[in-house]
Image 1: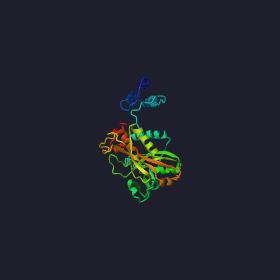
Image 2 (image 1 turned 60 degrees about the vertical axis):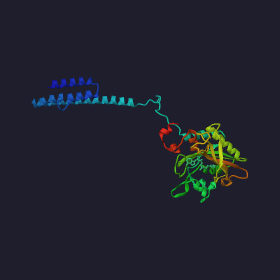
Image 3 (image 1 turned 90 degrees about the vertical axis):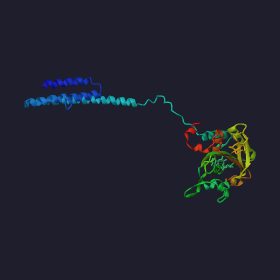
Image 4 (image 1 turned 180 degrees about the vertical axis):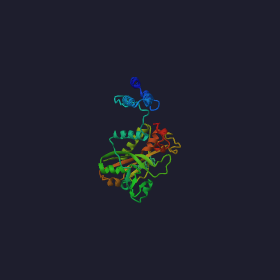
Length: 343
Ligand code: FA5
């Protein structure tokens, strides 16, 4: 039996040498050391027929064989684990010199942003600063400083979102409050524009959104006249819509300018002949403008004896609609990818 044990050990160790993977190792473990039917277990069943002395001797040898086989199997297991880990690490390794994969799709600018960027470039080329102002505005800057005192009916022209428990705060209804902020900060002379988001409590339709963009502009200097204003507004219209575009200015009341005008451009659908979109007028409204009211200049710290100026407020959203022939303003803020992917 001792011979058989030694032979089993030699055979098992030899077989272990040619093992190539974990599965083969498991098979081998079951074959030699398995509790049920393993070769060593089977061999040891013969122990019971031996004398006590022989049992002791053979038992000791059997233990040695079992221990050395178990150690050899466990060493092989560790070897395989190391190889497996190295393989995993190799798979996970990061080659930072490898060129990046090409992106599957590109994002792009929103049409509002395209026109805003374009107009910022256009105005900076004429020496205008580009400014920003708060969207949550004080009631003072949104109305009072613009010559619209509390309880004045002119406040009804722009229905507002007030802030709960802060009745002196509003979501700004136009970009005009930044006129006053800019004059107070920079004084005269001044040339600036403010593109930005505005909010109104509107019954929304194809032309009116609760959230939309305007682009405000102010010019203050000595001897600034209505003619300068007309020149700037006309050059914007021609820049955006082509050299044949004409502008029309109709008198309109805005409390912060005098005189004030409603600014229109040639309808892009009928080229001025009259159609459904322009309500047969041949013109489409794009904003308001006028010579800044002396009350607003004084409130902003401008010396009205020396300086005067004009202001304009384009509906930037409207400019975008006209540029791209968008018939429903609500599409612009809808997040509708089918619509946005066209730009
Ligand atoms: C104003 O907001 C004045 N602050 C403009 C101004 C500035 C006049 C400086 C004089 C001097 P009005 O409410 O008309 O004016 O709006 C100007 C433009 O914003 C409109 O012509 C229109 O193009 C756009 N607009 C107004 N309300 C909405 C709306 N709900 N949705 C989309 N565009 C709008």
